[in-house]
Image (cartoon, rainbow, N blue to C red):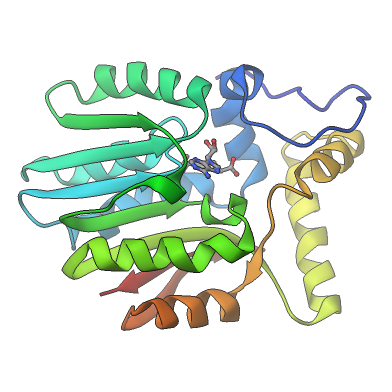
Length: 240
Ligand code: GEK
């Protein structure tokens, strides 16, 4: 695993973007930046397994290098499923394709390089939005959830992982401090933490748990359960 040093030297501030340099160090970046990332990946496969229906589709929206798809695949080998993986970073999709070909050569996988806002969802039993919704403009989030809801079969689920904000300012700051401490403990310097924060500030816009819960209910989901939280990072499962 190549080490992420992208923000280790002083840079002119530019918005974060998922380019080839990021792809090169991405597994290390996610592991050291998102508390619980590896556990979420491992466990979401098990969760999905309880809802995946034979002869249906599994969508991975903002698939990056396909980690979530691979986890689902590992736990649903006995089913006939079609995996649809979408990401609008060409560099991500290219690397994802070679990885999935290597690890799931006999499974039907369609890789699409496009904006998830343009995607049609059909015959889905599981939809994964693992740390992706937060990158969409806020006003586009409800429409995507509605599209997902409409494309899900009865009994289907959306697994939604996100960074959270908290309505109480002091509590919010506490969570941010804990997250930064987590990054420090994983070897990131204060310079790396502050430069990454500046680069991602206009790109990753988190919502609160309450906002997610209400928006999911408004989109039609009958129940939303929070199944994971580590500091200000959480994963929810929404049921149709
Ligand atoms: C994982 N799910 O490892 N359309 C398509 N893709 C998008 C869009 C968009 N509008 N906006 C962002 N992306 C992965 C991790 S990473 C999370 C997801 C992170 C893509 C973007 O290119 C990137 O690959 C991914 O969403 C977000 O389970 O980096 O914090």
